[in-house]
Image 1 (tube, helix red, strand yellow):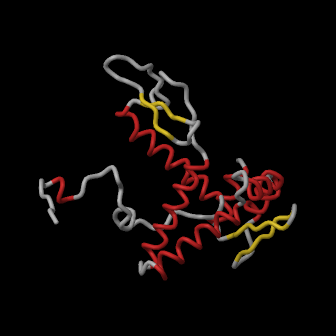
Image 2: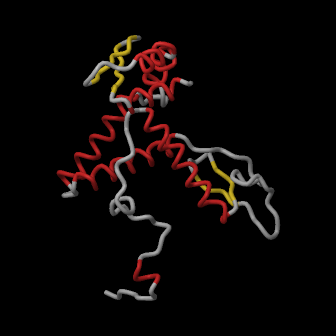
Length: 191
């Protein structure tokens, strides 16, 4: 078991882990099981490291604040339902994590499938930062991007920001890479 798994086990059993200096603060409705306490005890140093410097200059607490600010703004300023606001705030966290963790890869080889660029499958750069590119076959981008989003989701969950419940798509969040129903049906709107 790793520190990440210990944190996840604690959260799944209703134990919220906070940090105060080098000490862990546990908050729970009921006494944690001995299994949970032992996992936390065994991985305390790693848990402290994860929660204080898990993301460079962002701590677990700052991720939760970032999420809360975006959820509040979407709900109260944006007029969204609580579920839509939660989904939008979570999406903001995903994008923020992806922006903070660009994946550099070597030119000429696809970062997803590992195959070299060739005349029939050209590898192109996907800009993540001015100096960081991920080189992919265009047909590999979708799978690579989904994998990156899943990595981001798992990392953010470790910070205490959990995936909002799913009800359909991402609660009305547009996906720029999908066509709308009207476009798929061949309809256009001319204003």
